[in-house]
Amino acid sequence: MPQWTRACATSDIETEDLIRFDHEDRTFAIYRSPDDQFYCTDGLCTHEHVHLEDGLVMDHLIECPKHNGQFDYRTGEAKRAPVCENLKTYPVKVEDGEVYVDIGS
Image 1 (cartoon, rainbow, N blue to C red):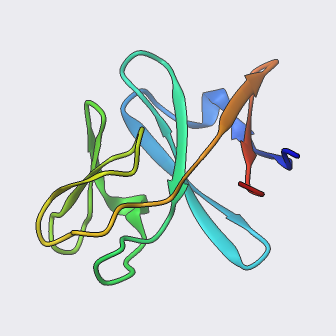
Image 2 (cartoon, rainbow, N blue to C red):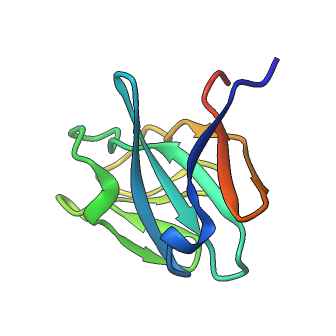
C-alpha cells in the first residue's frame, strides 16, 4: 500500500534541477525533468555516500558532485564510473502543485 508523503511544492524545483528532501532518518533527492516530470531517488551516491543535492542535473542525468559518476534519475541506473551500483527510485505523484513521494516502496 502506498505511503504518500508530501516532499515539496512543484514551484520549489527549477526545471533540470533537484532539491534535497529529508524524512525521518532518510534522505532523498527530488528532480524536475526537462519535460516537467518529477522523480525521486535516494539522496546519497552509491559510490561514497555523498549527497547528490549539489550535483549537476542535465537532461535525465544526475552527476555526483564528488567523483562525477552519473545516474539516470528516472530509473536509478548507474551510467558512468566510478558508480556501478544503481540508485533506488521511488514513485512520485503531483497533486494541486504538490509533489508526493511513496517512501514506503
